Amino acid sequence: MIVTETEHFDRTAAGFVSGYIRMKPDAVLGFATGSTTVGLHRELARMHLEEGLDFSQVYSFNLDEYAGIPWEHPKSCRCRMEEQLFRHVNIRRERIEFLNGAAADPEAECVRFARAIDACGGIDLQVLGIGTNGHIAFNEPGTPFDSRLRVVPLAQQTIGDKSAFFGGEELVPRCGITMGLMDVMRCKRNVLLARGADKADIIRRSLRGPVTVDVPASVLQLHPQLTVILDKAAAAGL
Ligand code: GLP
Picture 1: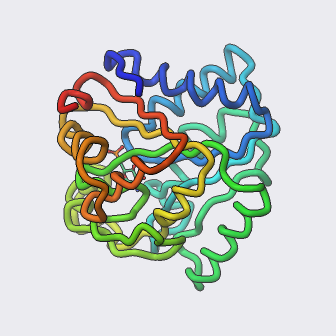
Picture 2: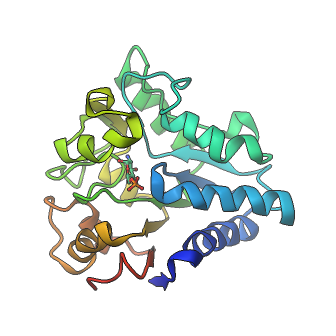
C-alpha cells in the first residue's frame, strides 16, 4: 500500500503504471474512468510526450461503460479515455478494446470482449477506482463474487454520485455494461486508486472489514497481487 500527499497522487499512480509498461512494453492494461483516474491519464500522456513513454505495443481494455449511450456521447467512458489518454499517446487503434454500451446485442458484446481479453492472454495490470458504496467497475453491493461480464442496473447511490458529471440525475444512464468481479480477480495484478475524504470510510471497510458481497471491493483482499494507492485523506480510516 502506498499513501501519498494529494499533490503526489497522480504522479505516484502514473509512476506505477508507467513502470509496468517499461518492464513489459506489450503489457495488457485495463483502465478505469471516473474523477480519480483523470490525473493518472494526464500524467501518462505527459510522460509519453516528455519522456518517450512508449504505448506502441500496449493493449488496452476498459473495465466498463454506460449502457445505452454510444461511444460518441461526450460522457461515455470511451470518449473520456480518448480525450484523456488515447489521442495523446502512440497506442495503436487496433489494440484498444472497449465495451460498446450501445451494442444491439449486449450479451454478444460481452462475449466478444471476453474473447478479446483471452486472446491477449488476460489482463496484466488492471487499474481500479472505487465507488462510495464499494463498487468496483459497475459491480454494485450484492454482486456475487463469481460474476462475469454483463449488463447491470446502477445503484441509486451511484446514480446520485454521477449526477453532477452528467448534469442532472435524470441524465445518468440507469445501466452499465461491466466486467464482473471474477473478471477483475482474474487480472494478474490490480491497482486500486482512491483519493479524497469521501472515500475514507469505504476504503476502510473494503480493506480492513470482512470480505463480503455487501462491499464488492472487499473481494480484492483475496487477490494475490493487489497494490493500493491512496492519498492521505482516503487513507484516514485505516
Ligand atoms: C464509476 C466507474 C468505476 C469507477 C467509479 C469511481 O462508477 N464505473 O469504474 O471506479 O466510478 O468514480 P470516481 O473516480 O469518479 O469516484
